[in-house]
Image (cartoon, rainbow, N blue to C red; front, side, top):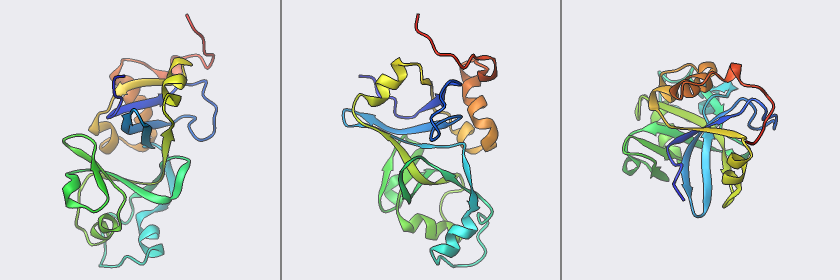
Length: 185
């Protein structure tokens, strides 16, 4: 099995499942135990300022206070997942995804962001997306997802509403021109 870690999953236009319709998922892990990622294009109606306040994280006026918090997926919706540039060694409860990107689930990262410390490029998500062994592969066979290698510029430099289209553009695909009807050749 080839790992899809560090790949985007682009929801195909016919996917109407509410958790993933119109979603761009960044896969942080994909191995013999299953798959895990975060939806990277669905900001919630909450900013980091509100999250800092709710968690009682002070420390001054963070430059990141107006940054959106994202819906990361239907699993563990009460937990924060921070996809960011940098090394996992710098944070508690962190794993390295690529040489450049890590995923952190610890409060020390949020406290650092509240104090204008930590990485400059990050996405804070509530919840994550996960698949059991073979489940994602079955969905791919059923044409639910288009796959493309992950690109940090899509995650961190592209506005959320444009990320799905930008990821499709890596393949030269315009999702607006695709039919919502799925099929098999």
